[in-house]
Amino acid sequence: MLSKNSAIDGVYKAGKLYKFVSDRDIKIINYLVKSFDNDPKSLTTNLKKLAKSYPKKENVESTINHPNYNLGRRLLASLARKVASHLNSLDPTDLFRAVLAQSSMMQVYAKTQKKGDALAFVVFQVVFPATFTGTIVFDATKNYFSTDRPKGRIAFKLKG
Image 1 (spheres, rainbow, N blue to C red):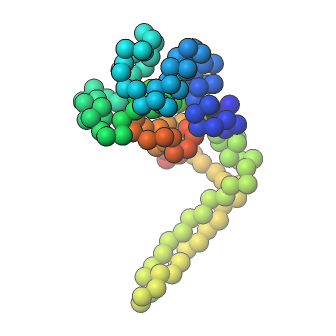
Image 2 (cartoon, one colour):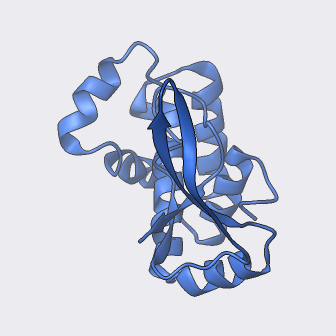
Image 3 (cartoon, one colour):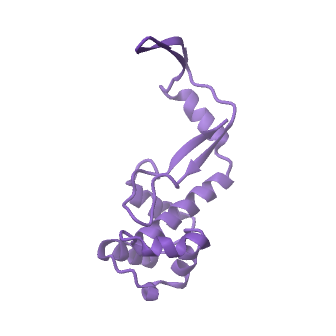
């Protein structure tokens, strides 16, 4: 669902699947994103709770005062974080490890050394299929913001 839909639709569909938002909530978020209407009066009780979850309390004022602040984008970013948090509670590491093992992804370990004005590889090791021994988590913090459109979908990050 997240990988087969746009950065916005994937979050909406996952949010609806996990009952974090309703169709009405999604319509309101879309309206707020497009209109730049930052008046919270139109928010449902559910969306008010969502807005309180992002950003952190100490950052709310500076976020709202940012010239590019958009309440709809804030709600979308909050929903994306909630979806990622829920997916992480399902412990996705084994699933990701299996996917990585079947993918055409490879790991490259490289060390460089300066030689005069040039940079040269002194170690270049390729590992295929990729292996990983840490944990893997979903991450919505790199692509969803209150002040800009999404930069990509919910991503994952490797934690060694």
